[in-house]
Amino acid sequence: MSGVATYNTEHLIRSEIWSTQLKEVLEFELQGTKYVDMISEFTDGNVINIPSIGQMEASDYVEGEAVKYTSLDTGNFQFSINEYKQSGTFITNKMKQDTFYLDRLVSSFVPKQHRAIMAGIEEKVMSVGPDGQTPSDYNLINGAPHRFYAQGAGNVISPQDFALAKYSLQQAAVPMQNLVAIVDPSVEYQLSTLTNLVNVSNNPRWEGIVRDGMSTGMKFIMNIYGFDVYVNHFLKKNITESNNGQSATNGVANLFFSAASDVLPFVGQMRQAPRVDSEYNKDYQREEYDLPIAA
Image 1 (cartoon, rainbow, N blue to C red):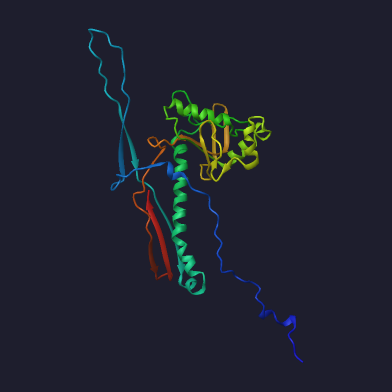
Image 2 (cartoon, rainbow, N blue to C red):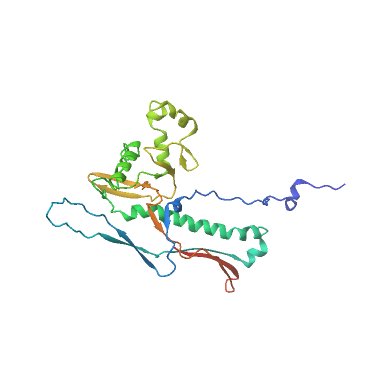
């Protein structure tokens, strides 16, 4: 009588099984481009000049004396197309022969390349404000700071910072409509664990925040000093500054601005729309895919 013993059947057993399902990597949400005023008249060239009109002056008039005439101040904002982004990948002939995930793999190239480029643009948008300011300086406008340290103990953000940001925007004549604050996830944690919030001594209505959390998706459930607050993972990080006896290391540049339609905080243009270029590289025996844009 013959049989099959367990000690001589190792070649008949599959030790690993590969699923037909593919797992997607989780991605952070993007939101920056909705605060960008996209220029529509940038069809050629690399530089566009946007003129600005200043304010008129008023003076006292004395009867019998000549009226005073003053020129109207004008300015010029120059915007340049100076960055080119691309995302490229490839798949070899051997990979085409060996993988049964081929169709799904190739079909994912363009969406993932588009996502990579948009994430790069998001990071750029979030750094425009901090990079445009003078580091280690309060960047005063009419006596109000537009770059300041968080006022909580240990330079952590507090509700007082939202009040100061609103005051600074008011001093710069920024419209008080559609106020937006974009903050790091650590800010939500800091605000959510404030003592007078957790013990509900600040306002009994905030019991719901302790129960359900401060945000849904990327947006805070409640405004803070008139600001709609959003969480973003792409803010400029690792900032080290020292100014007037204060210092901060590994800081994050949280942003406060008005998103009113006529004063969007960022200006941008995607002059070259994304398009897919693909070709076969005979030297490397592979198909190459590229997604370039000019922005």
